[in-house]
Length: 108
Image 1 (cartoon, rainbow, N blue to C red):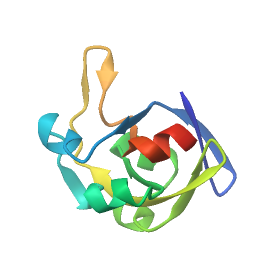
Image 2 (image 1 turned 180 degrees about the horizontal axis):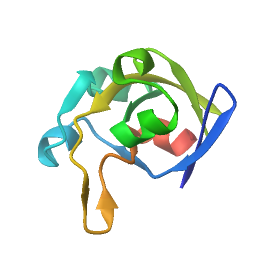
Image 3 (image 1 turned 90 degrees about the vertical axis):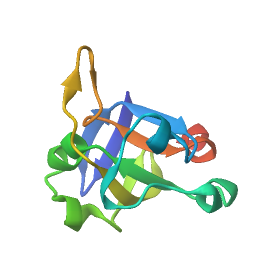
């Protein structure tokens, strides 16, 4: 679990470090904003895409969270996208996750 802080609200949410291909391979479209790209990956950008449950747990809406800075394990990340809601499937819930580029994930 990853510690997530925004406006002094501390959450523990599952996180994934991956590549830009993740959205296509896992059929995880972005509902708002965008998914990170190769430039973000190469620039070691500290950006994140959030599931809808994470956004709700932060007390935000999809549009209000885009561009906001959140701290993931004390590392600041800019929220660039919100995933389309898919709900849970068995033990996993794609709405309750934080996705970031691998280099940024390793720093968080």
